[in-house]
Image 1 (spheres, one colour):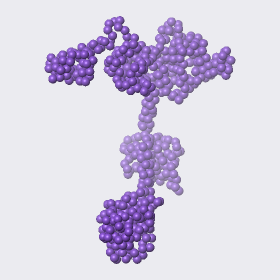
Image 2 (cartoon, rainbow, N blue to C red; image 1 turned 30 degrees about the vertical axis):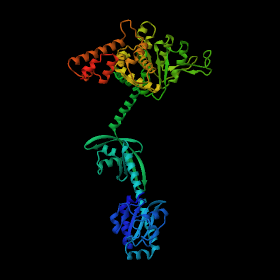
Image 3 (tube, rainbow, N blue to C red; image 1 turned 120 degrees about the horizontal axis):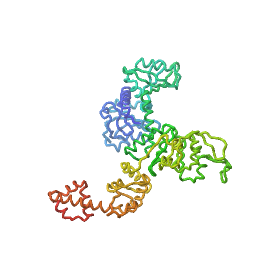
Image 4 (cartoon, rainbow, N blue to C red; image 1 turned 45 degrees about the vertical axis):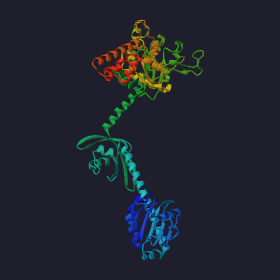
Length: 590
């Protein structure tokens, strides 16, 4: 709290005191800046005071100070105006509020007449000063309270303006009390206008049951627009009732629904790949995720079939329900039936005495993912077909059927149509599963995704290894894009993890990583020199040709690096690496 914040009020009080007492007045804040003054003191308002020893004493002791002989009393000895003070008398008292020092109010006499007036009733003067001190404190407190109220009001206004809905507060007499920026924008209003036609339609909504929305048509700047409005009673004072109207444009609600769909698509973000084929598949998978139809995902091992199944589930209306995964090829045949369909107590030797629900029951109202569906035995294919057709399951050893609400997503890396032709997979089950087919292409057919996948795995392994790998040099990346990834994304991930066992920071280059890559990918020299030797040899020959060319044309070393598309420092480093004759360097740098 500072008296400077209410300086005009302080000056008015100082002028009033001086007018009543016919004595000069001076008021300073807690930093001894003159806030107000009369007479000659008025010229020094808003400046730092000199010789403020008396005021400091008043604030330090918390008591008034009376100076009958200014310049000659004990307190005056340290003042630069000692024995030459222009004042003839002074009385001051501190200004406190809740034990906080606000400043000092002082009465000053500069002649004998003012001195006589000042001291003829000093007790009454002190009481008067105390009252004035209290008045100043209360004025400052009042100002602080008003500022807080303004601040709260501004906060409330800002909060209302942050709301995405239009807000209008109107009483039952049609008087508008509050309106946020969104409401003004939706209704096409200025600060001062609110059309009577809109008021009347809002007043009609007062009769409408509160809390329930209603769509109405409003003419906004000559154009008919649809709004969804909800009314709530806000407050009541006697016969005046305030109503709060929350307004949304219907087209914005529709846009919000579309944006919600975009949010659902985020479930596919963990599936790395921005090639045209992957973008098309993700869009297709999202569209089919909104239905309950059975899906068959086909693709080579390691292409990410389970990731797609999980994304489809998380994008679907079933996302809050279970997602159950069953690998039909990893569970022994004699256990697969009980895993899928469950069993009743005593169904077989070693069974749980209480029985056990199967994966289909566990996936009720959710999604079940049947991976490697091609590995399912023929006798279980019959039972699975019944579950899909009847939407019910019967436990092993049970006598009652259990209704199911489950979406089935199956996946395989085999050619099911070929298996049907060979009699190894039921044709009727194949058609039942293949309602919505999704084909995931192998990594070799979408090489554009290798870069994104590589850097995605680098981020993962930087964190898990505590490493600081910046990336892969272009020669490594070019090699990776030429390589046939038979294991697809899974093989690529394992390859990046393999490199992290040998490198912890910086860029991974073919120069350093070549031997490790050769061992990992089983590259042999049966068909001539290794690709690592040939790349180095080609690079050396290119550098020598570029240097020879610029030498013959009297160029500079910068010209060679420009021709090669590399930096000057990189060129020197590679010349040293390949032991290229340094005469190229000396001749071309002149």
